[in-house]
Image 1 (cartoon, one colour):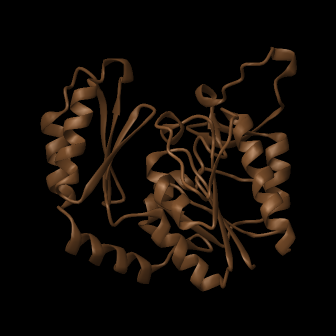
Image 2: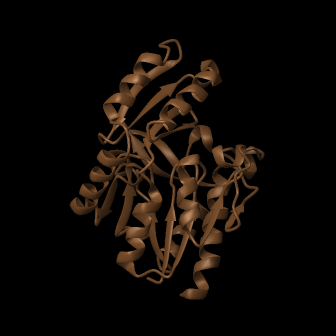
Length: 270
């Protein structure tokens, strides 16, 4: 495929019930398709229109799901359309080829992390020692690559977030607050690096991307064209760039608009 579409998933293409943003009257709400089940319960959705658009996109471009989720979390998702040959998990830590992690890519990522930033153990310990149990609900390590906390957002002190971000910056890590999760991710661990590798392997001459969080900024900047929804960290901070389109739609309807933009940009090259 000459066109590669790399898109974040959560709060970009798929949405939890809490993130749907259905502000219209109930009778006018879009029909929804469940695309993820966890512990026998529906967890994530997209509109039926978005599902149709994603299926159509599979015939116009190489679609690459690009997520901070672990491989296990990603495999819970059942997206419409043809299966993706490539998928990027753990913020670029794993490049899946036909569902299997590429060992060469994994080795390259591990070598960069060892050379360029503080260890996961140091960062994890600092998070655990400085976070207050009053507002922390869970401590998690993802794929032995990065760490995150699940917090009570209304109790979270913003000063602590700023202080931990400065501490991490000095050790080659970045901190990102997304919903109820605080991520600490090594700077060399990026979605953009993995997307460039997929573009090299596929021979793509046009890369399109979408995302809503600060962890997606490098992905958007690496693409020829990118889109961000009207919600999320990037929107809240007013982040933009010359090749990035800031969309007004918020919630699950933003997923529809993003897929429309992908198709519109990919179709001339079809």
